[in-house]
Length: 433
Ligand SMILES: *Cc1c(COP(=O)(O)O)cnc(C)c1O
Image (cartoon, rainbow, N blue to C red; front, side, top):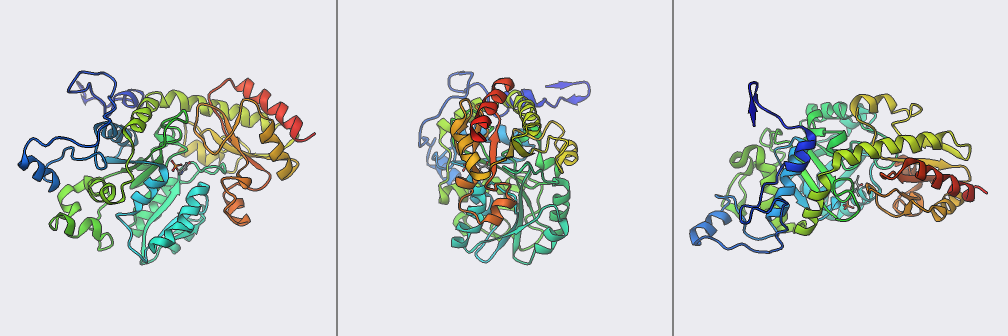
C-alpha cells in the first residue's frame, strides 16, 4: 500500500490481524488454516537437496517449519519490529533457544535478579547441566551490570515489565550498557507485550516471549517465541562462533555471512529446532494467532482494570501495600510513564495485613478470581507466590522477586472492574476476620 509520501506503514491494530497471514494459496481460506501435518512432498530430488543444503527456503518437516507456525512467527516479528522470529513449544523453551546459539560450556549470562520464578530456577539450577552460568544483578545499578560482564559473558537478560514485583526495567539504560560491552541484550517481553513495549526500539537484540500468556490471551495454548532485531554484528568478535564460523553440519556454511540479518533466525531453525526439537504445535500457533488479533483491545482493558483494582486496594485498611508501577506511590511510577506510556501492564502484587495465613485464606475465599499458576488470561487470576511458584527460591530470592510470604500476585482480567473489586472486598473480609 502506498500514498504520496511513499509506502504507508500500517498501524499496530492492522498488523495484529494481518501480519504474517494471507488467504491460503491452496484454497483461499481467509483464516489461517491449521496445517496439522508432519511432512511435505518435494517437487523432485533436486528440490529436496536444495532444501537440505539451506540453498532454498521451504518446508521439509514440521519439527523445523510449518505454515501455521510460520504465520505466527511473521506476525510476532512484525509486531516487535524484528527481522525474524522463531516459535517454540513454551516460553521456557524460548529462553533456552535464545541462548543456545550464543553459549558454550563455561560461558555466562548477566541476568536481572527480578525475574519470573520459573526463570530464576531455570537459570540458577538447570543451566549448570549445560555448563552455563547466570550472574544475578540489580538492573537498577547499571555500573553493577557492567562490572558483572566478563570475558565469558555472552548476553545480558532482563524482563521489560517484571513479573510479578511491580518493577519496570529502564531498558534504554541497560541497552546502553550492553552496547558498550558489545553484548546482545535479551528482553523477556511477556508481561508487557509489544502493545505496551517494543524492546528492539530501545536497543534490545533479542526479545523472548511466553506466548502462553497475553499473546494467546485466554489461557488456551502453551507457546514461546524469540524475535531477533537483525541488527547485531555477530562477526564483530570471535565471541559467537556458532553464528560467525563455518558450521560443519552444513558443509562449512557461515550463518552470519550467508544470511545477514536473518542469521540468528535461520540458525534457530536449522540447528536449534532441528536438534533440540522445542517445536510449537500448529494447533497452538493457530490459537495464538487468533488471540493476537485482539491484543491491543485486551491490553488496554487489562491496564484500565489493573489501575482501578490497584487504586482500590491501596486505599483499603486491610491492605499493607500495593506494588504496581501504575500507582503514583510506586518508586517506578515516573519510569513507567516515560518508558511504558500506554500503561504498566495488568500484573501487580499486594501485601495483606495478617501475613502468610491471611493470604492463604484470601486465595481460598475468592469467587471470580481463580487461584492458578498462570497470568495474562482474560480471566482474573491470583496466586500466593511464596507457597507455589516461588517456593523453590530462598527467602532472599523471594523478597527480591517481590514474592514475600505476605504477598499475593494478581493478574487482572478484562471483566467488569466493579465485580473484581467486590470479590476482593468479600475475600479480604474473610481473610482478615
Ligand atoms: C510464564 C513465563 C515464562 C515461561 O513461559 P512458559 O510458557 O510457561 O514456559 C517466562 N517468562 C515470563 C515472564 C513468564 O510469565
